[in-house]
Image (cartoon, rainbow, N blue to C red; front, side, top):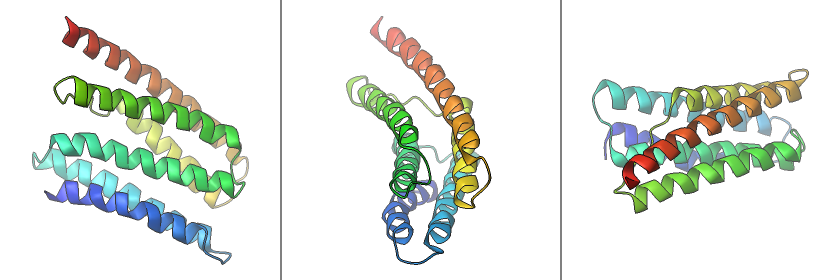
Length: 175
């Protein structure tokens, strides 16, 4: 275990804390939960920076870092959907996209010599867009559905790019 992997593990542990605080009684509970979400984002940026800067990149980190991100994002979106801050179709689209990516990642990792497709710039930009959309919604920004829709559109674009990379890598391995 190195520091970036510890930060990824912390992000996994922040998920149940987010849920607990989000659904805790009190008018500020969503704001406090959003601070947990922000902390998760900070650990994500920090672990990526440290892993690259000090050459601490591991297969475990390459696989678990995006999984922690996806689980946190899905958790946040489910909580916001349950509390009716965002419409159900948002979590349906993102949920299907994330499940496809998780299964694709597991397929390559466990069936093809522990290969991991690293996060690409489109996936990172999509994640940043979703962080902005969640923060905008949590802090009651006007027309938040437009910001969320933009994040979904970019997320779908990132999925298309990921699928192209997945197919190219799968074809290269299979030949």
